[in-house]
Length: 185
Ligand code: IMP
Ligand code: MG
Image (cartoon, rainbow, N blue to C red; front, side, top):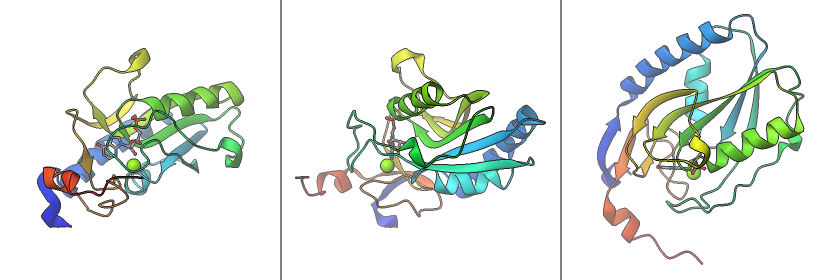
């Protein structure tokens, strides 16, 4: 697995130090509010675990499975998720957590459906990584761990075809990993 990595972008200690800062900011901003963290799985799983243990506030945790990539490196353009399993969010301050803001399609779809179907007191977005690129509607995260270029990254929850999520750092794959992947049917 390590042999497939071209270079490391963020070491584990760099990520955790940044999460200390993000968590301190979130703790200050949501003090005294009814906070519900809505984590988008699977990508945000390590981010969620490490960030939430640093937030010093009472909070509710809800998880939602969403996917738009279906295995490749380009967004498929359709986002699938099911809000039916979520707890009541009326009056709650909802902070959506995701691994990465790329095209913004996933988070736009989720926050749009949340504000249409429920009555949260507020909805904000927190991502570990935000790609530097233009997005429809100027969509941006309220909290972002790191800004990165428009390239495909893996590790610390982020996958390529469900591999590499368990790398403790974030890195870029060697080009040959993409070119040797079997064609999808
Ligand atoms: P969106 O394009 O902003 O909707 O991103 C949707 C999802 O695609 C993210 O939540 C990630 O799971 C995945 N994704 C986007 N960019 C990358 C990447 O560079 N590496 C791995 N997964 C990514
Ligand atoms: Mg993915």
